[in-house]
Length: 257
Image (cartoon, rainbow, N blue to C red):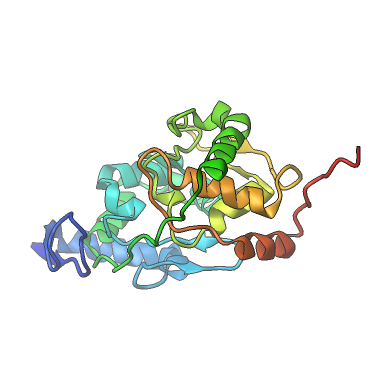
């Protein structure tokens, strides 16, 4: 039996409010819903899939809203992400590393497809990107140089990343969420990708807490989140300050010479 799911919310240039999604198999969607609950997808990302801040991490919106990663990935790409930890320029980090390493990479393609189908068939949230910051020329130039010195060797001069290993910044919705907790956390504490059977490298990122002040972290994140066609809300220096304190991350080392 095929059923059609109404996608709620405004689609900002990508379709009308109340647009209908593709047909989905009702039994597959039901199975996916059950698996999502059993595997705590809805526990962290909420029953309505709109995500929530969990303190040190942000569980993002995983509804099919076109501004989210799930909204932009196909069912096949979501399955690949849950199997390998990478898809569509995104690479899993934080709590998802353990989920993928210890759980989803070992699940059958059939079950992962059911979860992916459930996510794509669910109502889209009303999430919209926040207002981007206004950066003057001096700040823009300083942030661009900081990116080239500290980030470009791995993430690329144009934010392209390395497929399956290092996340892209350009066009990656995971980097652009209004809640910037995850990208702040990565700069303060470092991060690593999952080690899976097909992508075993588990590339790591070092902490930059010792090297960057709160203001410098804000500058480089605002630059990354608003370059190469990206557009994202301004990062708050208060967010960085609070998370640095909560995580007991190092302070920037300042030379006395």
